[in-house]
Image: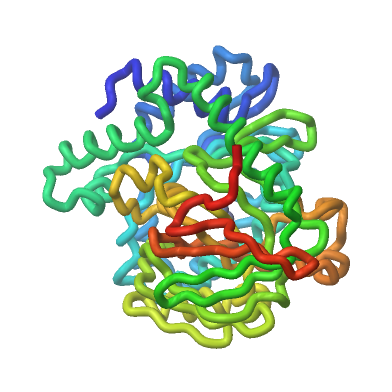
Length: 412
Ligand code: ZN
Ligand code: ZN
């Protein structure tokens, strides 16, 4: 366990730098029951900061599993209307949303993947309106994690439950800079570094990125008007917030019809409680036309079949191999951490905010500009110390963007 003072610092950071909670604003929190003590610290601080209402959606791995094991298909395939209304009504009210994600990566390993895919699809479809609030930055939102027992033991299998939780707290506290005297100031400085990196890339305005690594030979076209983002974001109401903590990436969107070649994963992917590992995808004109996986191939197949946009890419993100998450030397089996240790790309929906004027475009316009749409958005890791990336400009000139997994461009 992290001591009380550390947890207080983390809670304050999540509220100020994460969702940047405003006076008289409502706050919705998704939290694991196992993290009730930490969540209560967050709630108390939120009211101290002037929150008008804090609503918690409690989740629990054991209860989730019991439902998958026992509920009939019609329940699994139906996402309840009341949950949709709950989320929509808080979003309409301009609430901030803080999600604490700490799922056991092996939770659903013995559940039929078809059942899991159906449940994921039902929730994604039902929540499509709410997702617009987050993916278009209409409201301030943030994702953080705290250690839970099963998850901690997956990372530290040789340790006792208690020691594993303590070790994961130690790792997370360092990665999210809560070990520093003034974490909020540390995040301001970090956000500034990411802002400079994205400005350099926006000026470069590459037409294409070319990835080369063992098992990877991939060309990703970037659409006209693409915008690199990273670090803090701004909500429609003008509030600066951090969607992910940690975050080490700068990211933009690929052209949905302009991805060609093969890419291999470099870290396992935890997709909603199931692991997919050592996999590769081959793209033709933006679409994954072939795939294989040493572990979780069936899950990957369902993922790619989710809808028309699922086998196309919606994000391309650059993360230097020496990021603090990488330096921990750990595999977290949790995308929030693993994607910030490694260059990654995402299958599925692109963030319309990554395109000039994208937030105001309808689905036909977005498609014309090469912006992918899907019910899913699933990041997976492709970076390593062996990854080289070239940037190709409109006039055909090529320069090194990444060499040996880290920046070759001067981003200072
Ligand atoms: Zn990303
Ligand atoms: Zn992503």
